[in-house]
Length: 158
Image (cartoon, helix red, strand yellow):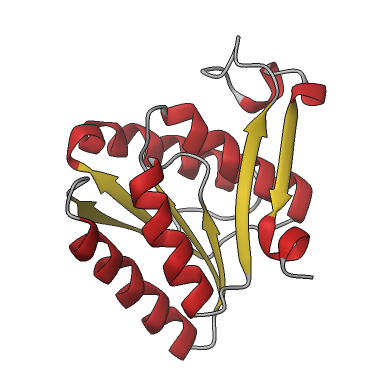
């Protein structure tokens, strides 16, 4: 089973565009998603989930489970523990795991990266933009020459 882990951040589009890029560039269509949501962005979660479901339905996945997990942005120990718990559970089940670090805040992403490193996660996805004039647009509306989608696990840990 393919697991995709992401989180709310400064932009809803960062979450949506990253999963869109994962499907397009890596053919990584998840079977289950974990959406870690920070207190400040918890209201974004329903909109993000609706968009993800719409997007994935176009790739043959209808109503996949999306589990929402609340995070307190300043509580790094608890955030890290929650992330570790999910990774341990899914790794023990033998699932392929991708974690997307694009949308999260740096402090939360640091916890995610530490957890990914410890549990030898399969993919660490990151979509970065060379040009920030249009970051809050749908993926195909941002010129592709300004977008770079990488699997850091493959790029860095060869």
